[in-house]
Image (cartoon, rainbow, N blue to C red):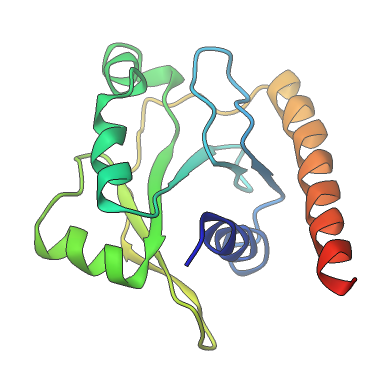
Length: 160
């Protein structure tokens, strides 16, 4: 399973199953954050971030990113929830070896089925997180437009 497969599955999960109004790819809405693979705004203007991981080494390397230390020091700037999104095989291994960092959840994406994305572990809620400002929402809207255009472009390539 590729990162693109996981990304589209997670996009559909948040947009249609959880009814989140904004979902964007690879754009940070807050200037002090890394560029997460997916950012989501829920109905209450909370920010949810998702990092896609396709291998164990990729998953373990995420622990070295500066965002973890920054979020520890500035919990108001951290997302309301944070998830890792992985394939079924990798998700099973992460859970068996108890490797999921604290304050994170796990989304598992399967290759088929009526519900191809499910929550393996709910992400804890960061009660100190700030809701998105109007300016941040405007930025996310621009990012979501770019996301939709990239999806349309990919679909066009597949039809040719």
